[in-house]
Figure (cartoon, rainbow, N blue to C red):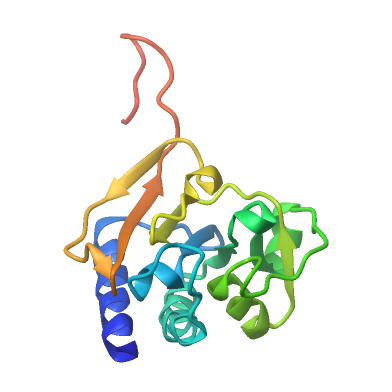
Length: 180
């Protein structure tokens, strides 16, 4: 099953990079319910092996595009995010006092915390793009205006998946110009 999950995620990430330009050194938010991936209700059956299978392709994607990954925790830690300290410092993100664990933070965020070189948890970010695996509601961590990206991959495992990028707000009226 883990190979299938990795393949699904890699296909989704390939389609994402074909459809958008990711800004180097920007934040990329990942929300993931490992419970949903294995066909269970969100927050009920966290699966470390799923987190492990998905982490490597996400990290490879981030390295390729020079992105900072931010792993959204669950509602029990108010959807706080696990990031590398370098990202926290670059974006001026205040650290909060919590360590994500399987039952309070979720398996994906907890696994990321153990894999990062110097992890910290922050309360809020404004990411340029992201992936939501299992309807974890990453929207609170995306910049305005979110733009959905349609891919052929609709699920990873049993979890519904949504991908989004963002664009600057269009302001002005009928005389405004948006591109040259």
